[in-house]
Image (tube, rainbow, N blue to C red; front, side):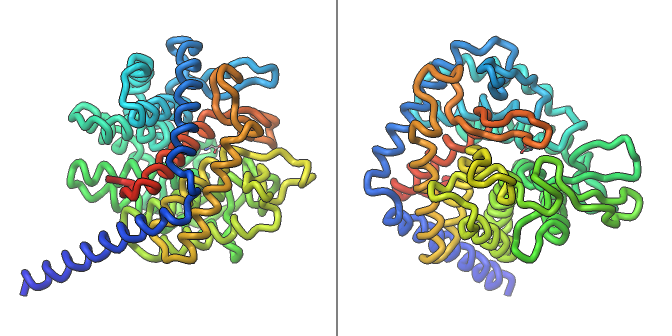
Length: 409
Ligand code: GLY
């Protein structure tokens, strides 16, 4: 009986895997006709620009953005963006299979590694999984695995069984337990930790956080709040608002994209259809919004004042492209076609001189016209390190789909 059950389960999983592979093969027909040469020439451009970048970055600095005057804005290893630059270097090395960027990557990772003990931030997924996660995927090693598991352990200390989620920002007011939608991006690290150790507690934390977020952030049109403040003693919601959006009930563009990417990962890791349905609903909101421009690079907020003159946020474009390409592989023909074609438009836009630096420009950043935090007048219409990372990730995904490969093999 037990064996029959196991066999049935295995057959079910195999059929799931096979049909997913079939879906990935079918996606090829929705890509650009010149998909492989399109990606290769853009990855080549990215590689040359990052070679230039790496020659101009001071040793202990993690590039974050540019000032209005065009000067490099540096970050340190504890800043939430510290994993993106080494992560981009790793993706480029993976594609080009050469060692030119190796020394630069090694130096940054050496400085970054200590953040595995950082319990003062929820951003460890961004910081450690985009960097050490890629490193360990490309060149598996027990030391890298241990770094990732320790990072997951540190992240887990911020989980509360009262609010049933992971704290994002610390607050001086002990009553407040602040969580932002961006936090969905840190869960991939927890899923990895369960696979690496066999300890299911990380998996449970990720699922619990995602379920709590699913209940409280999404509005009837499937746009989401940026921030929910819970009562740390009771778990009750105190308020829902924004920090980086136009107003509390607006749809801050990057927040929507974090949700899209985050719930796509949730489906990848759990195969629970409710996450697929949510990711599809978010995609629906984004792609059919009347304020999404024809080149599909969103304004910084879907409800930004001054549209069509409002600034675009190209980092949202990069993120949407990467997420939509994965989401396409989990869907049937209609959605798969729509998402792949939208990602194609985004990547074509980002690869044009409108959004992408020429070699040697912008100190080495690739993607221009990002918006970090407009309400505080910080990082408006500038390159952002995560705009580069998710652009290169999306190109790598596009290439795999063009080659009929599994995105995660
Ligand atoms: N996680 C911060 C941001 O998206 O700007």
